[in-house]
Image (cartoon, rainbow, N blue to C red; front, side, top):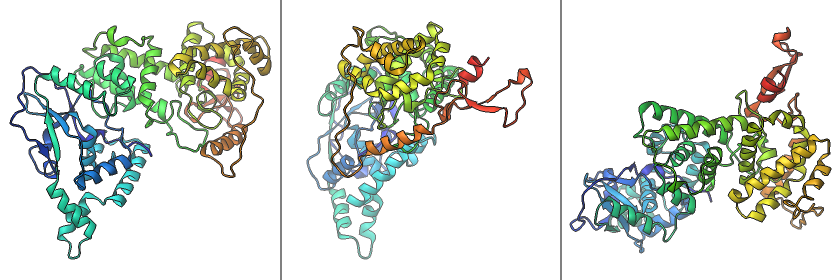
Length: 514
């Protein structure tokens, strides 16, 4: 079941302030009435470094709501009150937001979310929200139906009982004493228990003022949502939002749907996947040559210059990989970033990023176009070898440079005239890749039904046979990088007739041909 994005329901704010707060006289429980027409809910905040509230699926939200309505034991929500009087959620953002999402009927697509994302909510987020609403309303009933039950002539008995319980039950609250540094320490300590932060989340939160962390947050939300860059100069803020929105579109348009029924796939996979933010951060770091221990080495970005510099370099590489920009190679995602059964390959994305950077530095992109057709055939036929390299090094971030070297070795062999089988044979003779083996076995299928992966594989195999090709390099063309080329150039007297037109990659059109 897909994770529901309810991040918009508690505003974020920087809670760095001086002074110590005493929590002795503050309230010890919160109920539904505190979320509606009260002096409490409008002043609830999340620390600006809080991870996105998007880790629960509809079933988990429903289970929590059911526990609350039935008066079951629920862990306390932990809050800290700032000197300004705001209530910061130290632990319990998902519990708090789940209850709010039900009360406001906002599972990532409602009025609060629309405002938060400035009306630009991704389609998959809308779909997930719709499915969550259906699931929760069927299991529990909508808040509006339950709260209205006592006023009905013949009320639904289940709704009436739930309405009675809503008036009686509450969630316990604990308070953190001390200043902002004590509250932040409490946050990280608590959030490494229960459902601990993963390594990337922890790194992003602890390095939240570094330019690469801010850039990653900006890209994943296309410059919308909480503005981690709000303290920067107005000009830098505007540029950060514009560039991150452009990068987001290059990486995640069109949206990925499974099973695969179209070759028009995004180059960075599904934007709602749990590994997406780590992928973006790694992409930024690879492009900008930022080491994994950046938290202790990079200075904080105080004015947005670092963030903007990182984003500008990332956009340039994103343009090169697959876009309509004249520099674009138009690398088709289905060839370079997906397996034969439609699974996204993070390590391949990192490897191609590293290869692009090296090919630009060595001025070898034109050589690549000479053998592009055979290189793409090689990638499709020997897709499993790249996966074997990734398995050897266990993680994409550890394997991608080896995959990049594998790619470069294949291209080198093709350039000296070897066919794709001979190119692979030479590669696996080398010391670096002698653990790779040619696989001649076939998948042993016993079930009568098609799995989602096999459905994708069937479509991909059929579609590749008829895919659009560049008329200059013969490589596969993606909708995001399709240009119309004059066969006889305009400079040489060519006219804009159908007979004088052909489709090509931007780089082939603007650079190779000229």
